[in-house]
Amino acid sequence: MQRAAAPPPVYYSAPSPPEPPVQRGRLWRVLGWVSIALSVVLVGGSLTAYGFWRRLDGQIHREKVDDKLGANRPAKLNDSINILLMGSDSRQGANAQYGTELGERSDTTVLLHISPGGAGAIGISFPRDSMVQMPSCKKSNGATVPAQFGMINAAFSNAGPACTWRTIESLTKIHIDHFVEVDFAGFKQVVDALGGVEICVPRPINDPKAELHLKAGRQTVRGAEALGYVRTRYVLGDGSDLARIQRQQAFMASVVKKATDKGMLTDPGRTYNFLSAATKAIKADDKLTLSVMEKLASGLKGMSAGKVRFVTVPTMAYPKDKNRVQFNQALAEPLFQAIREDNTPPEPAPAPVPAQQKVKPVPPSQVRIGVFNGTAEHGLAQRTADSLGERGFKVVKVGTVKPAAKTRILYGRGAEAQAARAAIALPGHPPEAWAKAKPGYVYLIIGKDGAKLSGGGPAVPKVAGEIRADRDVCSA
Image (cartoon, rainbow, N blue to C red; front, side):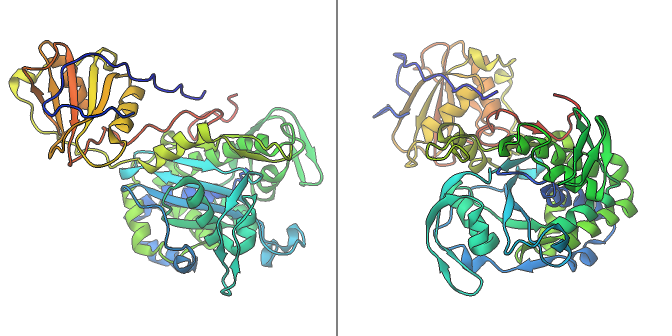
């Protein structure tokens, strides 16, 4: 269910903070093989102790894309990692058995966001039928494809992975760090290396076109059978692209669950065989080097299936074509913002609190807090107030103050427990009593050193139909 918007702040006649406020502010289809790339990232940490990475690294085909991304890219705001995952339906080489269509298309576009320190991961699917504005792109032969409006998967056809990368950045304003591409043949090899993946179907399936024949209920599929399952469209669901997305996200979740199973991670031989098959199946950017992968894997050692989820960008009907969709910006933008502003977690050892401030914190709902911006960053107080509101705090005032060097949490008489709760949400800023404060109120003055909320930036909003990798495959 979509998270309800935080209630607007109520403005009380509380006394001014030390520096008086001067103004008030306020897919497409997801083909399951994308999970191969995701699993390479999540499982890789188990190999760092065995020294196998260098051998695996030589199996990855890499492509230079820096010169095709342009200069006007979103800034990298934090230590999170964003990897663009694409499933190619190329029919060249080993993929020729799946048809003779010319060229390449990306029927799969997923942005994998990994929070700082491996705190969690979310795969955001972009429906292939989404009508979007695409920027101009440079092809590998130097030719330029002009900017255009059309289906989002046309970007890959126009100028390859770099064009899809450039398009997603322009639509979301999220900085992407790397890309990984996987094809049909590689998908089958990796599923087999896993020993199959568990699925659950509501009724027997007989689809000659997809070469798929399944019994009803829980079962394990391998190779060609698994590929048929993720490719079939009309024998499961209502035949729509969006209905297929959720089913195939469930498949990705099952792959992640299997790949991160303790039995897999504690067996170096099984892990190596899986990753060997996976690295042979992928293409990546040339900056996704061995050292980068080792660093990434080391930071993800604590990652589990329960910390991974999949969502689809919220869409709405495209008025000019009932077979197409467009982004629902009112719902999509909070999702994109949460990804952009996923900040580095606070230091694990907070500064000691004076004895008189060691009080039992009250719930956020009991904290009446005013938020004031003492920096030149436009909208900072409002964004912080919104985040506090999402966490249950009762924001009573939002405004600006004269420039402040340091962030401070001030409180009035009787608000020690409320200030203690605010200090938990905003670590590194010990609460200070303020004689002029209105009794029972807390004041947050944001200085040049910032005000990072514990656990990162804005919480990723709930998205209808999201799937977690640790769920039961036969759950509704």
